[in-house]
Image (tube, rainbow, N blue to C red; front, side, top):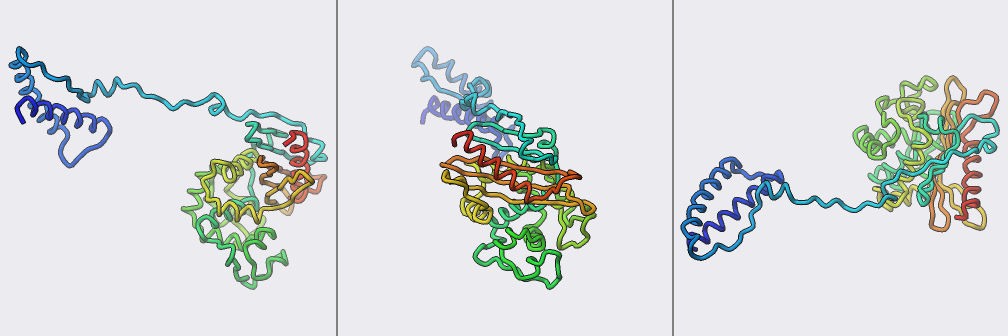
Length: 345
């Protein structure tokens, strides 16, 4: 290799080192020392070029200087206005469904990019999720293998609980449908605080606050087998956020496995309505304070003809009404059925 070729190789090497430095990559050698070597070699090379300028012309050599890299155009991925736009919110008058009960309803139609909301102030107020949180704890446990639906029976401790259906050995399917708190208390403890926090953060689940892990803030119940951060305690979420979380789990961009989601859908299956085949999946939840129901929920999603909507119905304390999660479920089923009929889905 003659001096001229040697210089070109050295010049390209210096340029590559500069590019690597800009990209944040470093080797075991000190970068400043490497630049000094490059600068010394460049000075010698310039002298060679000047001496040979009258003779053969040097071939053009592309170098990667800091200035050249800085001047390169950064091409951003194209994003359509539709993709960037936030879903629109339409406020609905669904008071007839509620029969005077204080509450809110949300239907999130992702195809239309619409939130249909009744009683927006309540729909955006965070409350305890109560047993609707079993959707989340079940999903995480299924994903991580803490629950195996084929071998999910847990032994009853022998303690007698107010719900007779909890006073027995019970499996995942029964525990979900009977909303067995002691079963899911064990599951959540096995999942652990660290993983639970990671998953709630990933889902943007309300305030993501599991600080009261044992549920000592719940003054309505002192039995630690029947309390936790999700029952009238530190964790809170709004009805609108509940619908958004359902879409995060069961929507097209879900980060959970298809196996776990299908296993969860199986236990969440509630009803198939009418000839249109509207399938509804959901979970109730209810919380009390001083013996009075202060939170009642029905949360889930519905499918028909390959399209999905995500919903939440919430009922708050209403002194002259019988507020229950069963009432919230009934309202939700009617709303979902009517929505599919009206929208022609």
